Length: 183
Image (tube, rainbow, N blue to C red):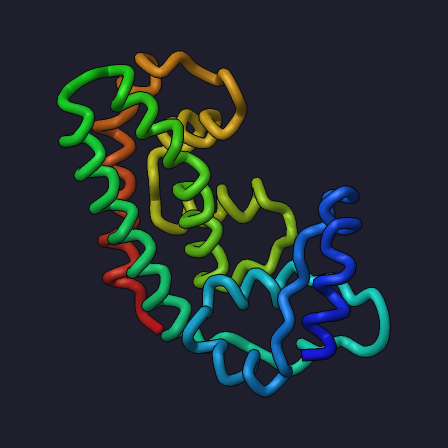
């Protein structure tokens, strides 16, 4: 409780400085939760920076089976979301384009998860994203077009809507890839 109260007292300063709220977990709780949050904790293990003292994550690893299962859950959830969103868009190109654009960052994250599943440890976000796409054998043009949507005003919504069929097919390919992936 004392650590939480000490952090709470600093929150306003951190917010002013654009510093993220720290994640406080006892080491043993973190270790016991590696299987429950493999994607999230794998990202912490990959991208953390030690500011003071020893590396608390030095001997921690995520089991590949846990990572594969989490990838499958996220990919299939994304697939369901895309199909549902398309139906809810009612065929309106602007709404379909908004769906494609809004989902581009999640697609990028899925590809980085696939890269990690395949053993990539690169800290370069773009390289990891491309590694995941290549591993799943996704069409480079589709991946490039969807990832471009992460940049503001990359395409008009109606143009993004035209990407939907190939985008959906790529996410379906991702689902097949992770289903067939062997630990």
